[in-house]
Image (tube, rainbow, N blue to C red):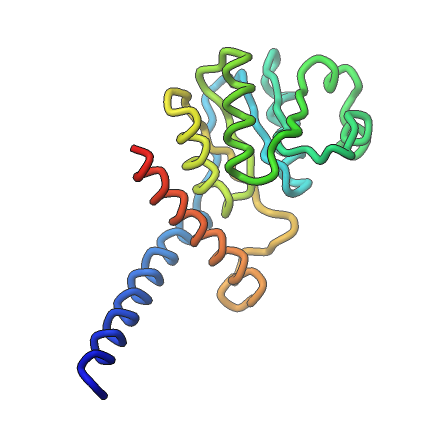
Length: 194
């Protein structure tokens, strides 16, 4: 094997070792991250994606009297009434305390939409509700848009993706590996922004 190919093979091997170590660290954090909320919350943001996220967000809203909830990334075809019925919420709760964000099409869009909402409501801290494996990247993107707002992670288990034994499930592995790669990209972009 020519020397040049040995260098390339060594570089690929080192890259794969670094990627694997960082990925395993990411998964350990995702699997062990528990919600840690202050005594009272005023702003709650649910990043759409799974029913479990919506359930957790509405539960938080009911526990925190006077709080407001933003559901970010709502499809334009979904009406307030459809969402109310699908989640089993009262019309009073939906009318008083729930805002539907329809701008976002991805996590970066969620961050932008959330920043507009937080500014219009003068929030200094927000509870962020999303799937545990999506939380690290969400926090990076949200922090890029809102560096001065305290973001409180409220991760929920995905009801559409079983992470227990992710290494034995090709679909779960592909989803979390893809999310990890996006997270790394978000970190690099955030560093370059600084």
